[in-house]
Amino acid sequence: MNTILVGGQWGDEGKGRIIDLLTERSDFVVRYQGGSNAGHEVHIEKNVYVLHLIPSGILHRSKVCLIGNGVVVDPVALVKEIRGLRRQGIRVTPKNLVVSEIAHLVLPGHKLLDELREHRKGKDRIGTTKRGIGPAYGDKAARTGLRALDMLQPVRFREKLRAKVTEHNAIVRSFGIKPLRFDNVWSEYLSAARFLRPFIRDGVALLHDAMAQKKKILFEGAQGTLLDIDFGTYPYVTSSHPTAGGACVGSGVPPTRIDRVVGVMKAYTTRVGEGPFPTQYDPKLGSEIQKIGDEFGRTTGRGRRCGWFDSVVTRYAQRINGINHIAVTKLDVLDHMSELKICVAYKDGARRYNTVPMDLDTLRRCKPVYQTYKGWQTSTKHIRRFRDLPKNARIYLNAISRHTGAPISIVSVGPRRDETIFVKN
Ligand code: IMP
Image 1: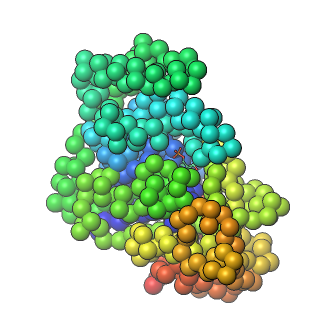
Image 2 (image 1 turned 90 degrees about the vertical axis):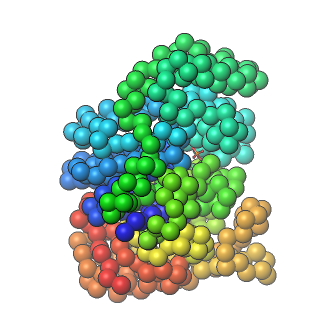
């Protein structure tokens, strides 16, 4: 059984929490896209772990984690993350963490250019995490990127890095900014390369050997469907494919070996960074849910915008990813609400949309068409069986499932591992 887990909204769906549960039934956990822009949070007993580049499977002994070729790896950030996890008592060795040799690297020039481009865009900024993601994927597509395997040969790595720093500096100068100093970049990247060398291997061979031994693979998507560079609300997207198709190209596992796609969806909707968000709450309810749901980015600390559940978005996500199981997270955040809304379509004047219009001006004009549901106004945190949920909560969840077009398999009612309801379908 190989499973892809994807975000069904704009990211921050609580994927880390669900991945952690599914990891128990997997042998390998693979990140296939994005980079240290992600921030997957997992609560285990009293400890909180935040993972940016490393698959959440690392928190389980005996699982093997792969940072796949589709990821852009900031070597310095990765070393920091490994050291941080070790300090928290987590074993991270080349036996349980592998970095694909053909994953591309995020360099200091990428991070600087990410920041400079955002600054220059002013009010039209994307609201990126400034982790260098867009510029790194840009160099990959332009075929001028550096890959993890370049770190295995110091002489060649130095040459390639110098050429890249020179190229990035030419652009940096055009912004009127002081260029990067190669010596500083080199000393930082050489020491990261030395540290990471034993982790860098052939990821394709690793996964195919695993499949030959009937091992189970879990693909851990970062960000969400509406942030996909093709299918998202472009240009307010990330530069990779968080969608299910990305798992195959980002790891080397063919589509014929995928058995199941789990879409993680929050019981409401959030979005961080700029870009249209049709079901955004009014400011008062927005800040209330932001507080109750602790809706602050784990990578940047930014407050997330919050809104009603948007089934136009989740239905679109279901189609693109082939989601056949839904995991609904953070149901408990809505426990106090007297009334809830689900957006079932958009209207732009007389025209009705049942899917997300890709023209942003149209999307900005769209008004949500809502169905209203009664709240349950009682705590769900202690509930562990679907049938024990308050009737109105079951009605609300069934509506999410019906409008999205897939059954719900998991509902989370709190951040801890045990605050979970497994639904039998
Ligand atoms: P980038 O991925 O840093 O280039 O940012 C592009 C867009 O994706 C911005 O709107 C970010 O806020 C958003 N984004 C990137 N990573 C995440 C994430 O892990 N969760 C939610 N939004 C994200």
